[in-house]
Image (cartoon, rainbow, N blue to C red; front, side, top):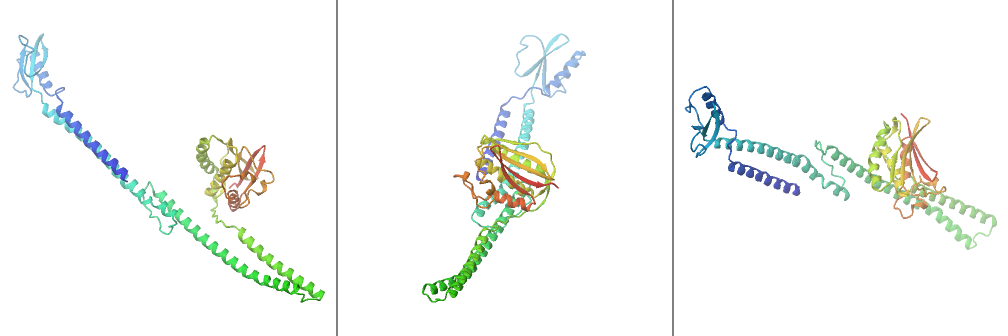
Length: 407
């Protein structure tokens, strides 16, 4: 806002300077051409051509009429020379300088005033409708980054920021819900681990007791020893069951992926992907092509579908050789197959079946940053949209295909 205030001040000074310069120029200018005295001269000339003597009684500007003779061209006032009936006459006149200057100054000042008023109105409009609402939003990302998610973003009817404000508030709500879900999840997992840990203690204590008894030779009977061994094995199975529950709890779906299945045009998906990656890939000198396709209505969540293809393309950028990425389309059994392929596949055939598993990263990951969740999320989203996703290696290219149902 300070920068805008500085620009407004500079603009105001420039407007004042233009006004001053225009008025100074007009005040110093001799405005004499194309004036009303010419009308009077023309009237007198017509009368003289008709044989009448010059009549100056009704003239406001013409002061005298002089026939050609000695000192004809010498006069203290402004004059016009005209030929009348073959003879030259000098018409002396007094120009109406003040009236013309006043009129010119009034015209210029009116025009400059209207233009300045319009500029000021535009600046005020920008300040009130664009900059001030945006200034109120400037602290929102900072507050969100600190985790202050409870205060809602006040909605406005601004045509410039209405949707933006709505989107920021939706982001805040989603982050707040995500934070709450995460806290509940951590709480549930902690309670589960505490419960299982407590349950493990019972069979573990029994095993220790049996082992101690055996080590001290308390059971000399062979049959009794076998019975104790069976009990130890049973308790070990119980512990193994609890451990399996812990492993299952740690590997169960920890992501909340909300999907709103609907119907949308394939072109909506393709246009969004093309719009973003055409420019991005051109900057890194990667050939990007989108195969021609027949537009149709497909089933799924439009936003989530875009997220799936974006994740796949990002993987292609990260793990490909950077030469080319292609999106192609096909139709099979009433489904639309969208395939993203990239050159320079470094994934082995043995790793291919595991790429959609959570937290799994192949040998080709190297030093690339990542969590191993991108394709796992894609598979979860496609399943929730009643679709599928799979990958294959074709002629040295990795091809990841998302399968959408046709409406």
